[in-house]
Amino acid sequence: MALFALTPEQQAVVERAARLTRERIGPRADAYDRAGQNPVESWRDLWREGYLAVAIPRAGGGLGLDMPTYAAVLRTVAQGCASTAMTLHMHSTVMRFIDALGTDAQKRRYFDEVVRFGRLFGSFGSEPAVSLSRTFLMETAIRADGDGFVVDGVKHFCTMALGASHYMVWCALDGEPDMGKALVLALVPADAAGLATDGRWDTLGMRATFSPSVTFTKVRVPGDATLGRPGSAVQVGVVESFGLGYAAIYVGIAQAALAFAVDYAKKRVVKPENIAVAQDPAVQRHIGELSAHLDAARLVLAQSAAEWEGADVPERGLLANRAKYLATEVALRVTSDVIQIVGGRGAYKDYLAERAFRDVRTATLMPPTMDRMIETIGKSALGIQEGMFHFGTGPQGA
Image (cartoon, rainbow, N blue to C red; front, side, top):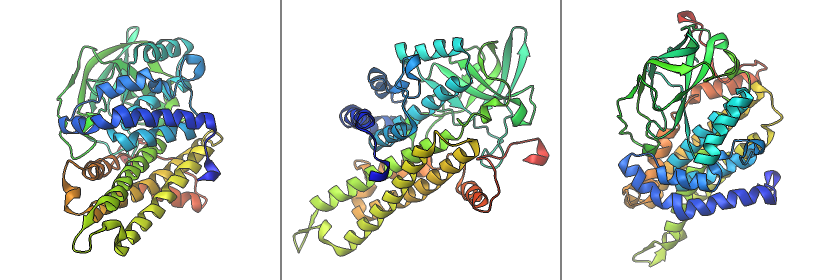
């Protein structure tokens, strides 16, 4: 990993996150997972240490982390609590959109809310009738109404619902299906009238992301609550960062699972030989194979993050797809095999391996899908340029 080693300053930021994760965030992960609740205390700790502002520029009072450091922080937090890492990533990506598309007034207002008061921002994109991995299409509509806008629609998997102060809602202007021209990001206050959630969130994994469905019924927002001009959100190279952050989180979960297996194998003594499981050649081969795969995923993640700033939008899509594809494959393999290595005890909720397996199996459902990722990677290899998503243009484009 020396090829993409962080500087001492970057490493200090990551080490501080590691200490926070080890001492505070990690020990709470099991309780939040069992309860299926937002990790509120962990968010507060992240805020106190400045990590809610990792994607806010220094001029706005934030840490202004470059992508390699940001990915390393996410990977580190995910080793202790995947849900906390995922919610931090969602919030931070909203900050990137505000930085790229917001007016000076919007930046001052929203960045200040995060830096001074520790408020979080959720991102609501998924919808019940649309598969974002097939077609980037929004049915939630936003329409001009007087000096403001009205939002109507239903969103699924709304991360941090009932926990964030604002939701960045992905909408179609006047219901127009061409997202390249009509996509609007609206920042909706969590207490807005007409906003309701069913509160249902009882899932296999990532339980502390608390992501129920949310309905918007004639929800009014002011005229300055939208970011950029219609369609601009997919032109600034921010949406692609979702995939890179997911990759960092998957790798972090897999690292924690493998570390658990290694520690278990060293300490678990079996009879009649009275030797540690680590002395079993079969276990050694399994650990060796998983370690090699995990190193490969970390290397591709680090390379993608290192090349991020200098890449244009299509290149960022490719970097994110490569990192997320490999991280998905490796994390699924590692977390599954770790339970096999540990044996029956790995199925107990008292052990980290069980939660890591559930979290990875759930988190890797985030778009784009495996098929979509390898399709775009293949097109790039063949000289066919295409972005991370297909954009909807109505029924014929779905």
